[in-house]
Amino acid sequence: MKILILPGDGIGPEIMAAARIALDALNDKFLLKLDFQERTIGLAALADQGSTLPDAIMDEIKAASGVILGPVDTYAYPPREEGGVNPSATVRKDLDLYANIRPSKVRTGIPAMAKNMDLVIARENTEGFYADRNMFSGSGEFMPTEDVALAVRKITRSGSRRIAEVAFDLAKRRRGKVTAVTKANVLKVSEGLFLGEVRAVAALNPDVELNEMLIDAMAALLVRTPDAFDVIVTTNMYGDILSDEAAELSGGLGLGASVNVGDDHGVAQAAHGSAPDIAGRGIGNPAALMMSAAMLLEWLGAKHGRDDLLKAADAFNAAVDTVLADPANHTPDLGGSAKTADVGVAVAAAISK
Image (cartoon, rainbow, N blue to C red; front, side, top):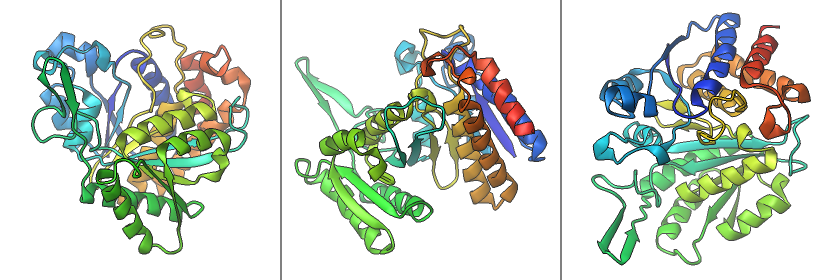
């Protein structure tokens, strides 16, 4: 089983190297026979090959069993016609990775704003307001005149239905509660379509409790009562914002794990960015990328009926929790002084015990 490793930009190569140490230990202990192959994307690929996502790499992504994608510094990319292709958006669109799953929970030993929280956000990943992925051709943003900028928001019945199905499937394996987040009181047509599909899926799953909430109220209640939520299902932009908020409540974006999945492909990518301001200093937190990789292994295990991958994913998460429980292993974002590589070594050691 081939797993493609794409370190990305900024702190990407550093945190990916730490994650790779842990993944190699996991591969050895559980005899997974995973074939990790690393390729270059992002600004380094632009300098060498004229594109941040060369066509040959995209072909390898499509052929791989799974992908672990590092953060990318799209702000620093030139226009697409000059080689500045957004790897995250392109991979999600071309592989139809419609479900972005982002868990957040409070962990022992981690200073967190929330006292108690264990939730998962199921974010629709291919539609909404994101202009780089919601059109067949061209951009979803345009200027009809020099003084007017417009953005197209795409919501489809099929897109809404399938992310709702993912959310209810998650809830049945967790605490049996789904909260649908919209702004249906104002965006009555598009949000109404989304909410209607969520309700239709809820009708087929009477064992799962459905609650509905407006996005502004949700943003407030996520701070006030984060323990009240189990699975949150929402559209692209709301999910992006709420998941960052939840990650901060759990201790920071350095803990923001994430996996992007469709029917045939899975890509692990932490929710945080490339942090170019600290790149090269060896202080980035690799925990989110590690837990994202664990989510990919879990998805692969379920998809291919491999119990060894499911057990390895559980062991990976347990090792990360064990290491993070000790403040000596906290990187600066968590208030500590640990180095990125040291965290990788510590997690690998916990796996190998």
